[in-house]
Image (cartoon, rainbow, N blue to C red):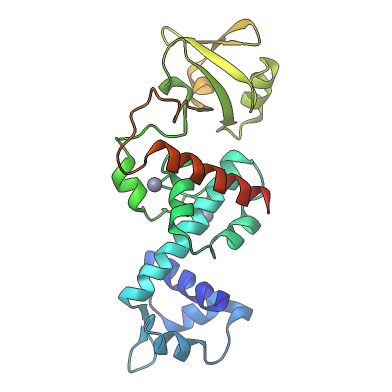
Length: 243
Ligand SMILES: [Zn+2]
Ligand SMILES: [Zn+2]
């Protein structure tokens, strides 16, 4: 099953690049290529190969399955990169084999419906992206999106620049710390650990906070009643903890 997922993933990537050459596919599979793999894919109705045997493409159902795998993989990369700040290659490969669309969509919502993975490759949108973009406030939002006077816990710093991280660390602003937004203009001012800190725009832009989603003062849609969302986030949390 995993081998088939790898094939579908490679075929999706080829399709993104506008390639359909069978030799390219075999080269991309490398040592994972197994004789008979292609006929299995064809028999399962996931890929079709031209009569000449030189071109390969995904069928409609193969494309649906590949889209889910790629989406799960790239959402997994975003999660590892943005939230855990870690190596996003290994974990994401495990994550792509999840069959739960609900789990992937839950994470997508949590991360603010990202459109690109850390490599810059497009993340195929899910139903969550189409339904929720304007209706629901994301669980994690940019600092500037919360209300003046609102207190929020820092989720992560979306910045790979050491100087920026160093500066924020100097202000005690790091994941898990509660900050209150005091002012947006002429510059962003937050209160952290009892002192006021003025931040320049680029630094303020890098701060992501947990919003008060589910605490009652954010509009919920009928697609996602608060109870169900909370239990989904709990499930995601426990699945991650189990890894
Ligand atoms: Zn990627
Ligand atoms: Zn989404």
